[in-house]
Image (cartoon, rainbow, N blue to C red):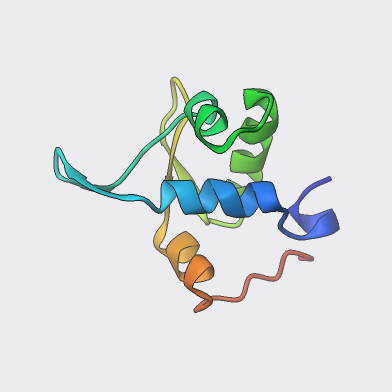
Length: 93
C-alpha cells in the first residue's frame, strides 16, 4: 500500500482533514499532532499505520514533521491546497 501504489486512501484524507483544524494558541494557526493522537481522534486501530500514512504524506510535502523527537506533524500549505482541490498531486511519480 502507499500513495504511489494506490493513490490517497480515506486514511490519508482523514489525517489531512484533522491536521487542517484551525486553532489560535501560542502563535500557531494549525494543530500539531503525533500519530498516536491522530489515531485516537480518527478511529484507526494502530498508530504505526497512521505513522506510515504521515510519512507518505510528508514525501509529497502535504504534511511536515515539526519535531524530530516524538514525531509531531502539521499540515503544510500544499496539504491545505490539496484538501481544497486547488492542487493536483501526481501520486504516481
